[in-house]
Length: 340
Ligand code: PLP
Ligand code: COI
Image (spheres, rainbow, N blue to C red):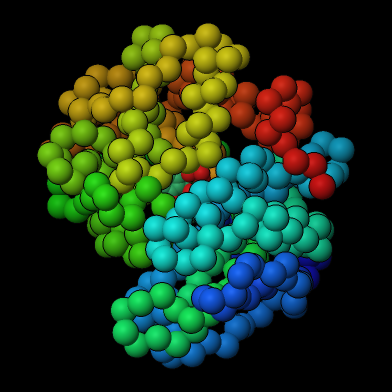
């Protein structure tokens, strides 16, 4: 789709084809990932016996390119996404994507599609790197060939209406991930398992589910595709990374900003769902979700209300601090931004 045909003032979190995508390929036994090239965005051909189609050997990343106030594209902590994808590759028996190829793909794709980046008021360009086993394999083993691909699309925040509190429901029927499984990496297979729970939550008028830990079904893990936070007085708590929780870039940044900019005490520890329900403010974080306040949580058929529409003071402060660095409205003392 041409940029002039996009209604930038009414974006949603959905797919729009853009100008180009980046592709790099390697064989399992090659020594390294080669730098790739840009191609017109479009369909790719793949063997029906591809490892990704048959056994889910694939990973994705989610990042955003923001249009800075000076008009230049800005990436937020892209090295963290590069290293998370490399760690995911190791877990899924994929030769780890190197930082230089990852960043080359992200930067070239964003620059070539720079006119698709919305203004800060409209949204951001969602960048989707993928690493997949595209070679044919019938035994359960690593694919003989891999593809690293990057495509982009303009989006609005994941949960409709930035900073509008959402309602969530705790599920006792499903788990997202188990200890020592793949929950700590962005394996594509983690997400299909969340579709039925999320669909059921939506039919009951909740935006998403809150998952509890698979071992004891007692501790909060995360929210579908975002990390969970609870504020108790002047202490901000998020579940510690056990291996089944995704180490979010926004999670890490929010903890850092809370302490560094506002002197808020931060703790990474286990939180029981009962404790979380007594918090003063609750919110979730993610690249797509940004910082989204949680207004209501349903647990065992009872609603716990945190907000009747207003945004908690600390949630708003953290949202403003994070987004003003991302858009260039505030200085970036942490060198988080890579301007292109
Ligand atoms: N948790 C899950 C399961 C996710 O898919 C995401 C999204 O990437 C997050 C948390 C938030 O991570 P990040 O802040 O790096 O986007
Ligand atoms: C992201 O925040 O980038 C995500 O990956 C969420 C996505 C699954 C929609």
